[in-house]
Image (cartoon, rainbow, N blue to C red; front, top):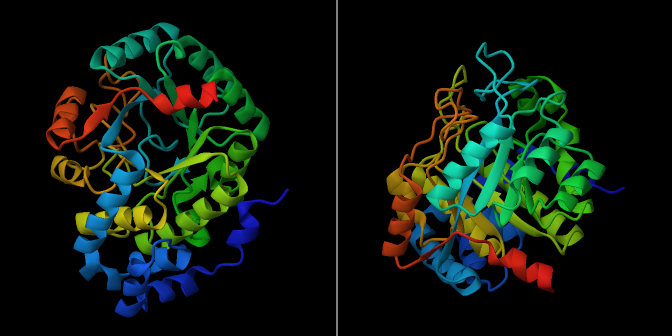
Length: 373
């Protein structure tokens, strides 16, 4: 079976990086003048040469997003089910070598967390766990999904990479979308950050979206952990991956997220700093390259940035998030995966979205339409 790896092997990190940093203003202007853009144009739009065109890019991104998605922002919340993990990843609070109390929610605890999310207004939940194959596995996922599927119109998951057959089981159980981040596409750097556990297998993780696409999951979410490597080069490879997936699994929808490395128990400092202006440029570049791509911003980002990015290209936002199992009501003091930056409640965020002239959407209507068609 052909996978993205066969495409990935045709590209060299250093060559792509050099091309990005050697991009001229003329190449940026050519990309901006097009009505339909390709990966070369995306490369130009994430280059340093494009920084002086950021205001123009933001205006264009706003218009494209409004045309494709209207003035709506989907609201969602993560529900962390477990912080158990068998991997050692130097940037994650759940890393196996962090000597902290581990917790996996049981059925009654999940019920309490779900009640808190429903009370806050959420109808779209993202289930998140560490990677602990012996305890937090497909059987646990299926049991948890069966328990809560009548409480939410949309269930997404962000868990360890699974087999194609296991993704088919999730699809059958009602999972709408699966998020999986390569973290970094730099193979040598990847090894330094992932020193033990199944996650240290770069190729297995790289092929995961192919398994998700083969299983027929409705939506796939990608992203890189911004701070591990040069954000521009990593983002090009992430776009390359998305481009391949869209052409191969054309019936599937796609989203991209922008997790910037945040403080957490026992983690390293970022190797590369990405400021707010850089992230704005990246969001605009994605929108100008692919107007159908869903773009998500989490509570990793600060209040000011999240307020201002709403009209520029974002289609979904988390709010009132807790990144620890039981964080909403069951066990607020359990270990966080990372610190959030925007601690405002869901209704505060919804009010800000409305004040910007946008509609906060709590229900994913697309799922209903897709089931009717």
